[in-house]
Amino acid sequence: MIHMTFTLPAFLTTIVGELMELHHVYGYMIQNAPTEEARRMVEMNRMTVHHTMEKMKKLYMEMGGKAIPPLHEEALEEPRQFTNFVDAARYAFKEEAQLFNWLKELYLIADACYRDVFFDTMHDHALNAMRLLYLIG
Image (cartoon, rainbow, N blue to C red; front, side):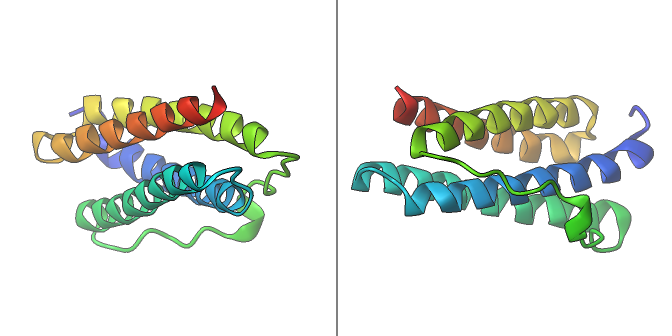
């Protein structure tokens, strides 16, 4: 195990912050979806983000014995402003790719008992990215 007690809580907190941002982006995309199909696909992505946030908070609690500290508004990035659905989808794709890489890093350093959680979550966000590519294309 490589510095698990030092790196994992901070990593999980960062991931939850990014997930909160993605949740907002997907909210914009749902409101501005050009078709019913696009809206449904983005709703699936948003549901994945919500479930991942809950998983990361639960893992933080299991590993640290306390709840993840609340993220203060000033610590979060200013919400992005988009001019159209496709711009938001491109941004969300980049965020999903970054999230996938972070989850991969966690998977590689995690104890065996947590690896399945990270692997499953990586898979879920790879599907999110594929749906976004479909919507962009």
